[in-house]
Length: 110
Ligand SMILES: [Zn+2]
Image (cartoon, rainbow, N blue to C red; front, side, top):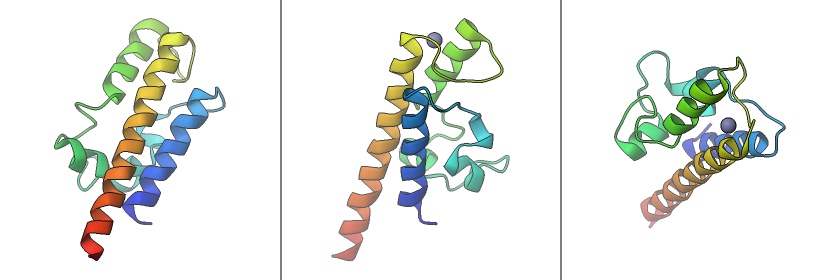
């Protein structure tokens, strides 16, 4: 699987969460984590994009904090309007990385 496909899978995951059809299992169901995390988080397209490991400086952190501080449930999913907004931020960020990867791939082909 190439990185664009992985990140597209991530956009899909977050769209399902926004639609109320999915939950966020963090590392366990994050498409790039499943391939790149493995305790050290090396080579993940998100980490390459932000320059930070473990999703630091990504919209995942406010989403995670909100889930823990406000809802504190086993399943991380959309419970309120703020959840939806934070999930949309995350989806948009995943899409931004897809677009960036596609742009780089096009440039490499020239
Ligand atoms: Zn919420």
